Image (cartoon, rainbow, N blue to C red):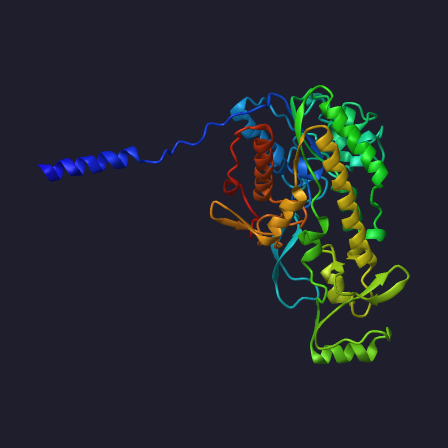
Length: 430
């Protein structure tokens, strides 16, 4: 009988010590989230795999945030959704087994989708359904927000033209038609990205000026907070650390002894001597031809068929719009640093939360884990970036949403639940 009594006490003690398994109840803290407005560029719109799709819009980080906000008083979140999933305006990138005209073996590579294109209705205006809560506009720079007629024909931004009620308006006036109680703001990346992806000085889009950027960014934030809305803003990641710039190694020309000897015997570029093994390619740098040097970058947009079939990098120089020189890399990184100082200064002055995306994207390079799944910045198999090597995959956007939620909770004393990143699709293999 005594043994039974001791057993019962032990059972009772274990029950009393049982850990509380119920999740923490979500709370909005200082926030009123009934009208959430997302302002930004391609990251905000849900751009992924080199294009915009309806599914990408639904996997955008603002839509994920809106779902979590819905648990603590968040209201309707309207997006200017596309009608299809094949990509607008370009077909999406997909992984497929392909053999190029000069390849002997088939390989898995990212190629443009070749099936039927989406409905022509993709370009139709959906302004009548607005105003919208997700106003992400792929390609828009911070300096564009205060320019009248940004969406106007013929050179206006096609994504803005889809949902702007007044094509002649300044973007900041159009996107603030939602009288928001809370906003997210992620602009500035495009002020660097167009320059970098276009090959630096070879690009049609040059770096925004610091003074121009400062005036535009301050104006955007001033407009967003003028009616008392609280917000969270993200700074600019290091663009040059993304797979679009880091995937192709500098010494990507691999030659056998015989191939090196043949090139050296026939090459008219006398300053070039190829060796057996890995070699730097020949590039066009302005009016000069030279070899790539350590630290310079070959862009993921480089057409490998031209390398293999036409001898780009060995018999002919690689055009400058597929390369970032050391000077161009330094210019892009300095602009990023200068713009981030402005972003952080304005956000602090307006008392809105700042998410250090520059630092967060660095952690992706070294690798992060969520619920047992690892993510890193490797192209294709790293799971964080999509097939364009710049924009996140759906899972990557979920991790971005969680980084934003962490800062919102910290800054505003909220308890908003994180997003389950693993429930979203990663890169799809054929």
